Length: 230
Ligand SMILES: *Cc1c(COP(=O)(O)O)cnc(C)c1O
Image (cartoon, rainbow, N blue to C red; front, top):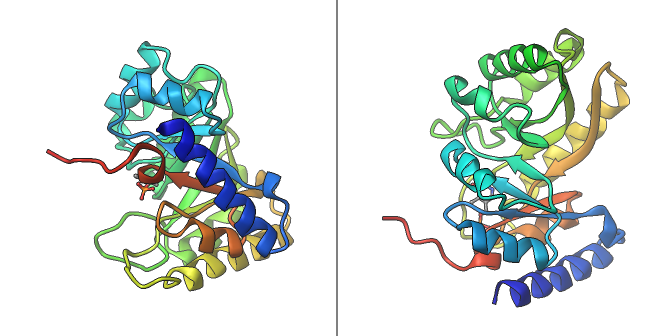
């Protein structure tokens, strides 16, 4: 089931990339593993996902204990409280969900303490939604020239969760905006920054995201099936 789902997603990723005139190898598949246990995570990895993304610190810690992510990079993609930063910095390959200045500062401190450089993405709240975390576009532009102040963090790109919509193609304008911002930031050649990763696109909209320049899609439902929240 999981293995076949991944094959089907790969096929759809390939088609979307080719249709957009892109090389399918430019786009990575991140399995959004929340609520799936170590065994199912292992199946996704052997089924060929490029990396795993975990939402909750508790799940991350538990599954790392069970060696669930062996053979694949693991990313943090959920809302991260500053009092849990210690459990994530240096324990994951990429923190995709750096969504506010206080968190960036906390990650920098912890990475410095550990003597490492932590790869991060900035999460942008593109719809400027009250209920959602993330930097505004303006905040990102303000921070970019100051990334030299955070030498133990390496900004590798942007992540976005667009507003929920059931209209097909409704998120394209947001994905295109993110891509434009990334191109613009790249042209500024700021210190300590690359915009190699544009993490955008989930189960319902990853083909649109690929058409708009995504280099990493985060897929849960299409790999593991529907999640049932208690
Ligand atoms: C759950 C989750 C996803 C995947 O969502 P699906 O719609 O199930 O593919 C992607 N990104 C984040 C941050 C998530 O929490």
